[in-house]
Amino acid sequence: MKPLKDKNIFKILKIVSEEKKIARKDLARIINITPAGVTKITKKLIEKGYLIETEKGNSIGGRPPIMLELNPEKGYIAGIYYAPKKIKGILMNLHSEILYSETHEIKSKNKDTILDESYKLIDRVLSKAGDKNVLGIGVALNGLVDSKEGVSLFSPHYRWRDVPLMAILKERYDLPIVIDNDVRMMAVAEKEYGAAKGNSSFIMLNIGEGIGAGIVIEDKIFHGGSYSAGEIGHLKVNEEGKRFCSCGKKGCLEAEISTENIMAKVKGEMESENIRSYLTEIRDRDLNFEDICEGANNGDYYCIKIIEYIGENLAKALGSVVNIINPELLVINGEVNRCQEILYPIIKLSIQKYSMYNAAKKLEIKAGELLQKGAPLGAAAVVYKKIFGGEIGLE
Image (cartoon, rainbow, N blue to C red; front, side):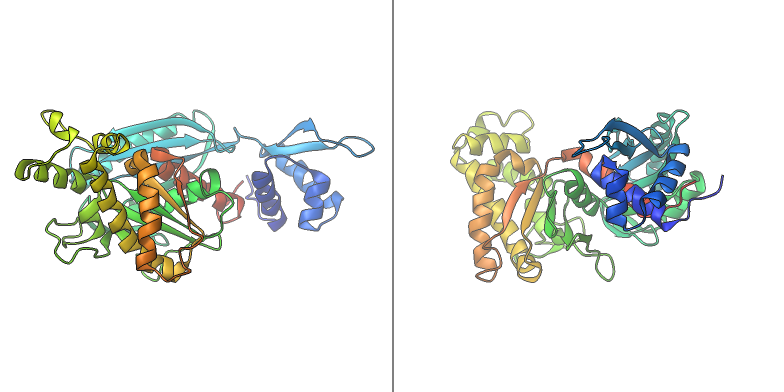
């Protein structure tokens, strides 16, 4: 089958994907080609199964126009997330609906074991497509990622350095593959489907086992010269920090307030200090971050101080970033959102101390809407955008 090459074909597919449903006359107006030209192209796309005719649109006189939309079953896209402690996979149709989702816990940090486990998961995800065509695989990966070459430059949680993941996956799967850092993929997902929809410049902050940021400037993901943009978790916020970060240093934001390190701090303080908190009543079971948020939300003084500690350190790290980028929105993802009514005002107030007067004045803070599905959904969305932007070929 001959590949589709006409630029107007991809313009039409891109517009239809963005508008969801649109009439031919509106396509002609937007693309600035003749109605006859649009009719010829859309006929070909209908014949190939990429477009379908749906219900009639509204008419202001004359025959109601037939609306066009993408055929959701023409092809599927896989999104894979190599998270610090698990691998997650989804299968998405062309209406961006998740048809299948699976998570596999990682029990070994051995590179070959991680790859073998990911192959099994990817195979299962792709098998759910049945006889439908899979158009590509998007991969979100923790750590520093060269998105152009598809190389894991440094994954502190996997202890990977310079692993050519794209080449490895392409050797097994004869499909277009796109790879990028996990938080950047989360940012794409929030922009396309979640809390950042309609925002052109924002920071996506993910707080979990690690801490990272995805930076969007004027609708484009910012990677930096060596793909390290957004590594906010490794900004030093405590000169006297005692806990080691995953990068091997002390005093990093991640070493101070990642969920794992916050729990280590709390458990250590409860053993060595006379803490007055409801946490002491439940210390016999394994405490988790949800317990801290529950305590803070119910007025527990010690738990509130922990949330204040998180907010203050976030503000330290974000102050310089806000000065430089001046984003309109900060999207936060992670368990910290369980106590956002306490945390967000602390960040807003504290960030004024670490940024210029006007830089954070209009900064809005929102909770991420996509949670654990954000990274694989964003990875699939990047493939989707490249397909309908003409960067990935279609037949």
